[in-house]
Length: 234
Image (cartoon, rainbow, N blue to C red; front, side, top):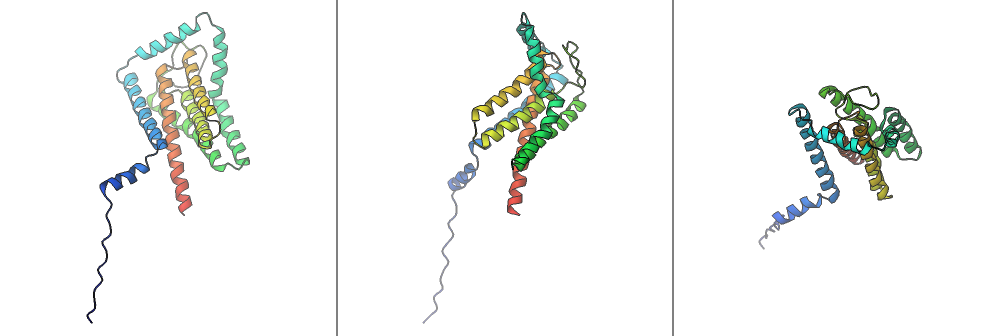
């Protein structure tokens, strides 16, 4: 009898449609939203640098200050409210949060969350100083209270967005009170607006601070997720 050769059955190739479906399966709503926010924040920050340092346009800043002056007219009690709210984005408060917050989270057994909060504040603070030194914009001369340092981007807006945005993300990720997560983001925006109200920052400083804070937060989240994924594989 002759030996019959068995031919191996051909391995089916994935169609183009199957490959596209596999690719889009990774594009979850979370990835699309985070990616879109990152691109939008980057474009906004770049645009503001062109407006302020290339075009030297003060149109938006003047408009923002006029809105705050109209808000203040006949409501001088808002000065005290603004000073109180702006404290929650100040250096003493943020330093306390960067130390006490992670310490509490570690005590509760949330080591990863503790690291996220610490790096969100510390990294944003360092990044903010680097940006301020690079752009070297002087603060408005019409400030209602003395504030040392440079102006662009706003540290209160940038670090506040990084901190409260990080806390909002943690609440959202763990599925606990998403409404509180939204309120934390609104609170970060409100802190930034008080800087314009008090004239210690130009409106463009605050917008750039929000954008840079989101950029840092997204980069941090992405880096930590990749790091922890590699740890699990090891």
